Length: 203
Image: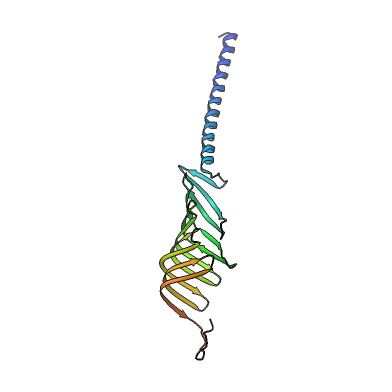
């Protein structure tokens, strides 16, 4: 092999390597372009603690706020959204509602779902509602932004101070900061002092 042939061989090898690099870069750019386009269409932007699993977006330490007349804030340890991003599945949701009289209502659950289209949220499993020094527990609850109230037909229990109460069905009015147990109510009072006729119990 003479000098000219050697030089030609090196030239062909370098051209082949350059072509392979260009192809790899082009494919990578195309994939990245499709990913960015998908996020822009859905309106959800990837965070450092997010990942894409098939057609779902998984977000850790999820936060969502609803301004509205009675603003509320949602936090969850993890959220999974489909391409439409209208319905989001939640793990460990915590919701804080701003009441109409300056108070706050705290709701927690094991799992939940946020429906952005209807501005509603549901909680399932180990649902607790904290309001002032009262703690309500139930199995499930649904909040409607339109009604500005949370409701359940499940059995409910209440603990607060010297009062223990059970019943069925619960309705929470956020504007009025009013919580009503609807039926089968049974209550126990502890450490209540006796009072005279016509006097009110000290509770």
